[in-house]
Length: 145
Image 1 (cartoon, rainbow, N blue to C red):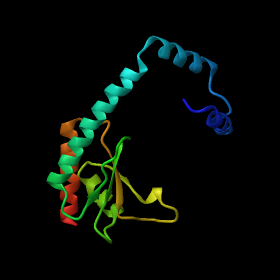
Image 2: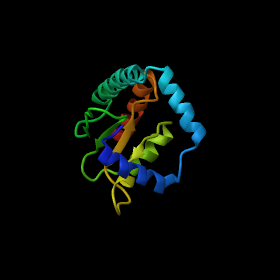
Image 3: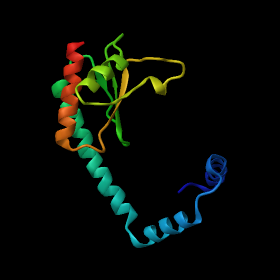
């Protein structure tokens, strides 16, 4: 859904990216949207994500050391955390992996950086208990550093 002036540009960009969406896939999606309340589903997911985000924020408050800054997004699926200056997200990633927890180090989101003190945390696909365990493990890895 976009205004017509933007839609023309989006169509061109999409065609350049993948040439064309399968006609069958388009028909399946059209039928689904005709038969289901898409807006209600989006609202359900948004409420769930809000709860998951709050769970992760609380876990961070409980387990991360002082000095770690965390965003409070108005939408989306991720929190962005910034470690204290000069801390390596890649080293934290390795320590966290050893504890069975993964996150996305922030350096791929910057141009020309091999490491950074930032990380991206996803709160959408884990249970509240898994979020609590994962954030506790990352917090422990932070304290060990």
